[in-house]
Image (cartoon, rainbow, N blue to C red; front, top):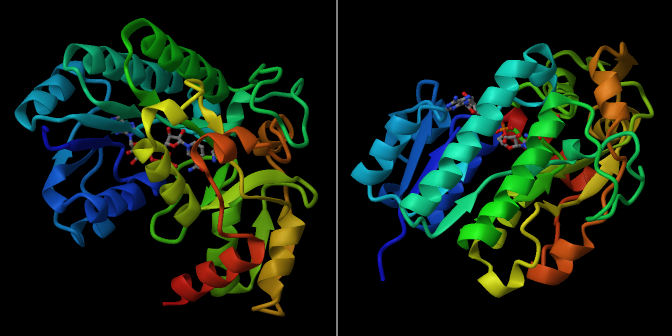
Length: 315
Ligand code: NAD
Ligand code: SER
């Protein structure tokens, strides 16, 4: 059997850094090629695996690298997220859609064994049921980011149906991590708050106090991603992205969790344009399909995540 060789695009981002390090542990440094538009992110130097500067929308360069490195799997993480996307809608559409369509075409041409491409809770909009949002429901996204994610899911499903391409996807909630910074999302407040709590014992949230959103600790997201990708093909019953859930909390609740460790921490609120985006998203997600199809299970709740975030950021 041909040895798997994985290409990660967007490897210097919030997810990419940790996913690259985790996949290098699972396979080997040499089998996991990291790439991004940016210079190599510092935490990736730890593992000293291969790194390329690569534009995910430059299909010629991507195809050449796939050939040169005998790539068998692609993880496409390069994207503009929700808040940045609203500032540059056409650019977000171009990056998010063109990179995906080109990778799907390449997947068929080069007979790639698997492709991973993440979707988001941003596919849901104001007409979607807000609590315990089901896997299949009304989907009318309000942001260009959400539109690109929903269109992307349909393309992934199409390539699987039409060409048998093994492309898998998750609708991540907001992700919280300490190793790498988030890159322009609406859920970024839930990372910034820990940094500010340690530095200044105060934080001004750009979302209002009772804005509940689905959230997840990065450790769970990385494990879930690898478990999805390693699951036997017959367990993957949805070729649209799977809902994935761990917890739901508001700015007021995360502040209270931090105050258990830093009693004099204080939070204030100054909602900006990201409030409307957050208001259009679900408060909580029903991920029972992922739990029953490929046995997804989260490990971190708000208190466990808060203790781990503060411990690691303090270091
Ligand atoms: P991020 O913004 O932190 O990282 C994205 C990376 O892509 C950056 O390093 C950026 O330099 C790179 N990039 C942008 N354009 C590129 C291009 N043309 N070519 C190559 N690289 C390019 O984002 P992230 O949080 O790591 O998200 C990764 C994926 O997961 C995205 O598809 C995002 O939509 C999805 N997602 C993230 C979250 C979250 O909370 N972080 C939630 C849901 C879905
Ligand atoms: N965390 C992401 C964002 O806020 C959700 O996809 O954009």
